Image: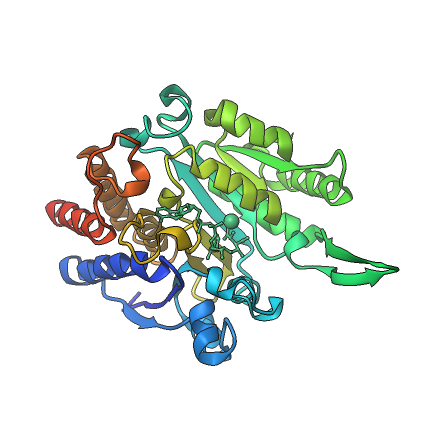
Length: 368
Ligand code: NAD
Ligand code: IPM
Ligand code: MN
């Protein structure tokens, strides 16, 4: 791939702060590894609303559709809480995911050894943890119709609809099985087939896809509520978890705390392969815009940096360079570098966002 294109959408709150660190790292790969990218930056979320009156301008969507990869910081914040629902920052992100058809959202939760004592769970429970949540991202209750707030007699009724077609379940199941083959070869599918018809269909389709094409992968099923409990009790029993849009959103935030901080969790949102064989892709940290720490230099940039590592792996076929970046993160953590979110009550002096970025750059430089 010659000079692949990256569209950077820093977004709101700490989004631009963590993205600045990623931009430094992208520049380093260009200079030190001759991995040059055509980088373009644009607005999304509240920042886009402020300029264009919409959280995702058509011109931005078009750029995203044509980019080899999109990197997004975070969207949302209190300044936009009272906006009309249709133009809220989050709608911009949801539209991007939907229009780009990014149905498979990979949310790895890996516990770096250096952080095992920082998790709210015991070291033994989380040390060495390496699981992958595959969240369906473009359907389910986030997008199902009918939806809205209507009047029924004297009261208002809020409506959302959980809806899944067979093909939507099949394609995300396939992506989970494919991933499992390259990891621990196990998939646990989570739904609530005990109370939801969409859950019954989910379980049936996953079972059929498995029997037809992935019988070599170990498959189990769990109700999502029990799955949440098992994630806290004994998370290392899992390899790949495949689940719907809403359960995946919740379970992945829970999984984040197994790794020490929400500021650690990256994600990749992938579509079907394009003509060039690569998927349309958007990479973003799992965390949000963190209004409580915005503008204070406290944000942990690691989730966003590890999201770029996922881009190197899944969009640019640079697995070895992705390994290099992940190893650099592991090194700085092993050396004791900590942003404020990774320090307990009696902790050492925290690094600022940019100091953490610089430490990772130094570890990268030392790796070549
Ligand atoms: P949040 O993830 O922004 O913050 C939750 C907590 O985690 C906060 O205490 C925050 O300070 C902390 N945190 C998050 N990321 C951190 C980081 N990198 N370093 C250190 N600490 C970090 O979730 P929220 O407060 O529920 O939501 C705030 C806004 O973000 C809302 O508008 C929400 O809709 C939006 N949001 C956006 C995305 C996204 O853009 N993908 C994801 C989640 C939430
Ligand atoms: C996430 C976020 C989003 C979601 C919001 C901001 C639309 O929570 O990416 O996890 O619910 O999918
Ligand atoms: Mn979420």
